[in-house]
Image (tube, rainbow, N blue to C red; front, side):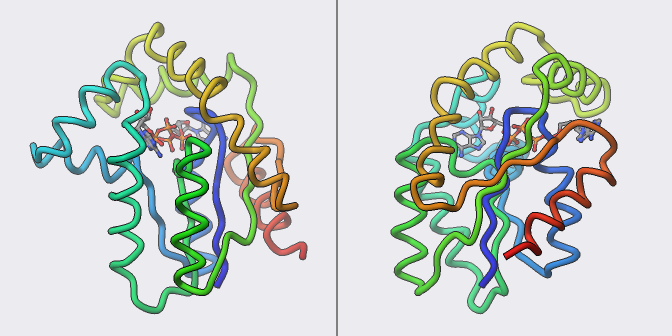
Length: 190
Ligand code: B4P
């Protein structure tokens, strides 16, 4: 199986690039952010809980997020692999994902991080707010908080994968097509 963690700060292009990767490599796309947003739209209990964190730019608690991810993975019986988009966001999540994949006789192939300047992140998210209706994109102070949470809680996950020699980073600045090409090159280089 080809199992890729697509990593990066909010607005780095994880969701955008995941769409390209699933098409080329025929993978299952698992975005925890998308799953939470679908639950918010459906007004489920999980959605209500997730909304209370997401709208402040905070992470949804590990206990909830890990169980959700596990149940989503188990829905697929013989996948060619997965793109994990927005998960793991903490070292606890990364450990839980490793344990889950071992139980399926597989593992993470690579974690690829998209490097993007902070100013560019803010520009992209505020632009998306014009069309997305996402409360977490519309407010500059919430965006600042999301970036701060990323630096404090999520960026350390890079070391988790570096310790397993699975960490790679690419330049996430430039056109969507150019970044896609860099990602394909990184995945295809073995
Ligand atoms: P996510 O849905 O993962 O949101 P995100 O980090 O903003 O990334 P996203 O994939 O949506 O955006 P992208 O970079 O593709 O998470 C939202 C929230 O859910 C989190 O803050 C948290 O509260 C919660 N959550 C999710 N997963 C969690 C977890 N594992 N644990 C705990 N909590 C969790 O793109 C951004 C914009 O940039 C788009 O509009 C795109 O069009 C644009 N763009 C992309 N590439 C571009 C380029 N090259 N040039 C110009 N614009 C570009």
